[in-house]
Image 1 (cartoon, each protein chain N blue to C red):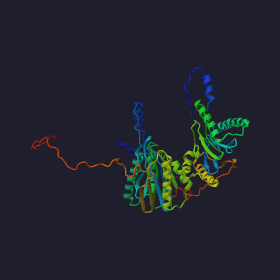
Image 2 (image 1 turned 180 degrees about the vertical axis):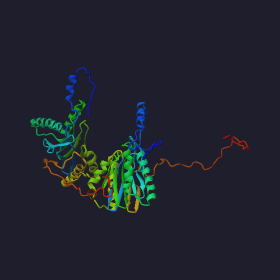
Image 3 (image 1 turned 135 degrees about the horizontal axis):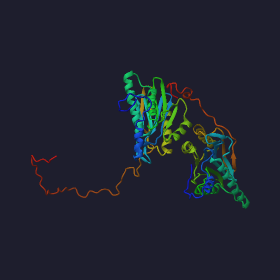
Image 4 (image 1 turned 30 degrees about the horizontal axis):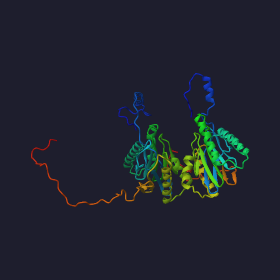
Length: 245
Length: 274
């Protein structure tokens, strides 16, 4: 996707340089993130793939990172922009710690900061090509929000990015409840991730689930889901239709 | 099967006779007429005794709902039905055409139609139009060789599947199928799953809406359940409809006929001219 602004074409060299400084298309991308609020906090799931166009280039990318003591950030979209955002947030958390005032940045504050950053970059036609999911728990209150690359931001009980919008949201809308236990929440997320694995071409079968509660943030070890391919119709699909597939 | 009215022997291959004329017209500024698209959710699945097809009932014209309760499950043969997504005129015309071809074929062979016959006729037609006939179909039926379910894409490719979804709501419906489908479903389980998938499309996709139509086809028997579920009923604030704030009062029961001011006389033979 190219963003073009009408510029006076006097200095072609300067324009070419200016163009090379703006994000025009994403290169290495991560696919969907799915997250839900549950009884004790927030659960977030993502796979570990980084696609380079149609190649599955990287299979060990952690797209979820803890931010400060209370939040977890998950990102889909351009991986280098995600790493840049982590650097910004690092600085933010560092400055917060230096105040040494007993208070620490909560998820609401981090979400607000990210919204401002994304929206301002979009206004300069140089977006950070990510859709971010921010979840956290502070003072007993769970928080789950989302920011897109153009600065659209909102909070909800369950969110999904990328393909998850089309495939996971219908399941979450139907089956989410406020009092899910940890096991039920993980089962629900795995259900969504399995459908994504079947139907999203850039998904891989290596995922992590992260849990944020009042105690803190834990990201699980990578594991894979069981899939089922034994439908009898798959064994001989053209038994009744010779010549088709 | 050429539809050309020119009396030339068929050359075989594609006929591009009208392309030059269409190009010339667009250059002269002719805008192609818009078409009615059925932003749609259509699904099909195979259960233990046969096939169940499902569809929503909303037909859209861009952002407007043109028909709140249209029929997207088309009759092909007594044992074969076809759901259609895409341009409404295209799905109607193509299914009608193949349905009549199947009937003539039944008269000639004296046998029940097979699903692959319908499949081959549809894909031949769609391929010859190179995707310009915008019809995406879910074809299902039960014939002498068992239950069959196929999807047909506008360019003419087909798939044979145990469960299938098409249309703009296909991802929402497919997420329900991928999460919940298993083999050997009973009739009630199958209907429940199809209704759930269509509802997922109705509530999560803007191009689909209104009611759920279901068609159950088994060996020797079919059931067309029109408006099986109506999850979007018209609601009224008051259960009685409109309620008058004040009771209508009867003021007078005496009827005074108005006096006649003009006498109307019928004159024979001078009827008004037509």
